[in-house]
Structures are given as structure tokens and as C-alpha cells.
Amino acid sequence: MKNTVVTFREAKQKGEKLTMLTAYDYSTAKLIDEAGVNSILVGDSLGNVILGYEDTISVTMEDMIHHGAAVSRGAKNALVVIDMPFMSYQTSVYDAVVNAGRLMKEGRAGAVKLEGGVEVCPQIQAITAAGIPVVAHIGLTPQSINAFGGFKVQGKSEAAAKKLIEDAKAVAAAGAFAVVLECVPAKLAELVTKELTIPTIGIGAGNACDGQVLVYQDMLGMFSDFTPKFVKQFAKVGEVMKEAFRTYCEEVQAGTFPGKEHEYTISDDVLEKLY
Ligand code: KIV
Image (cartoon, rainbow, N blue to C red):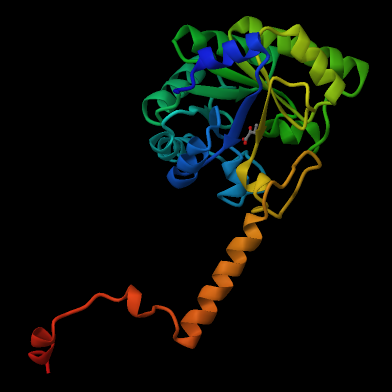
């Protein structure tokens, strides 16, 4: 069954949990889609896990469109959400609508995601008014890493917690159909989840959120540069890959790969004429 914004709305009403994972390429998107995940996020985390940057600041619209379009080709049923990269929407409402439109037209997104609370509500309003579904993202917003001074849990003080609640209500009122809560104390995320009529999707925000999202390399143990506390490794795929790469090297070096079963044949008649 094709997942849409309606799936998200109905899941919230019925109290059913939503699943979201990141993907950045066709093959992985296909596997995630076939596993029955509700939504695939083409996160700007591709800056870290695909391109090897320290943060997401350098990710471009072209990066997001290139990877987003590949994911969209692999996702038959999952709702594809593509991240708006740094400075593609902060600069003006006009830029936000134009760039969200490009992610839909060229990346074939089903929705876009952007970071921020009250300050980006004019952008959320304008993008949704253009018929483009928006997922908001509050709490730890990695594009503002330089303003935060590092990757830190958000909303711990009274003022910060009140600001987070205000942001959550504001993005919902502006038209977002879901909101990602990143690195937020579990009890605060629970409160926000109860206050909102749109689903909350947590990452490092505890169990009470309406859904969860993880970066797939993190949950498969494929990315070792940095593992946040909230990550659970559901498999050690990184180890399996390394072992397969080692075995490949050994077999090539020993001359046991490729074997007869991997060869193409040519008739003896043709071969004789070559000598
Ligand atoms: O870019 C990303 O992968 C994200 C998730 C961490 C929510 O925004």
C-alpha cells in the first residue's frame, strides 16, 4: 500500500507507530521499501555518511536532487521525504518555495523536510500553500550546529523546553504534516506528542513519539565515525561487508576467484582461428 500524508494522519489518529529510515541510493531504497517501512528520508546526513563531510553544511541542492531521484526510483510504497539543504530555504520564502519545487519535480519527492521552528513558519506556510507536504524538524537541528556549539541534547532547561513546545505548535499550525524531534529528553518529547495532532517522529527522543527515524548506516553498524547514544545496531552489516571484502581479496590473490562457473565460453572452432 502506497504511503502518503494520509497514512501519517491516520496513524496518529489510530495510535499506530510510524517507521522511517534514511536512504541515499536506489538499491538501499528498494530494500527498505520491500521491508515495509512507511517512509524513506533522503536526509542531508548524506553529507556525513555518503560524502564524508564532518557536518551537513556543505550539502547542496544538486546533491539532494541526485540522491533523492535515485531513492524515488527504488521506493514503490514508502513516502519519500527529501531534506532541504542548508541555505536552500533560510534565505527567503521565495527561495524556499523554488527549491522545494525542485525537490518535487527533479527529485520526485513526496514531501520535503526542513529544520527550524517559529523562524521558518513563513516558509512552511508558503511551501504547503504550493501543494508540497512539509515535515518539520526541531530540537537538535544539525544545520545550526555552529550556533549550538556542537551536537547536544536540546530542551533541557525550562526556557529551552518551553521554546521547543512553542516551535512544535508553530510548525504544526503553519501546515507541517509531521515533525521530527531530534535529541530531546524523552519526557519532553512525550509531552509534545500529546499536545500535537500531527505525528512526531523521534530520533533520540524516546519511545512515546508517534514514529521513529534512524540513519540506516547507524542502525546497520556501517558507520563508525560517530555513534550517538540513541542508536541501536540492529545488525553488524559493516562487519559482514568487511569480511566479504577480505575474502574477495584472498580469493583473487590465491587465484580461486573467478571460478569456472563465472566464465563465458567461446567455441573451439573460433578459438583455433585465432592462433
Ligand atoms: O538528515 C537526516 O538524516 C535527518 C535525520 C537524522 C532525521 O535529518
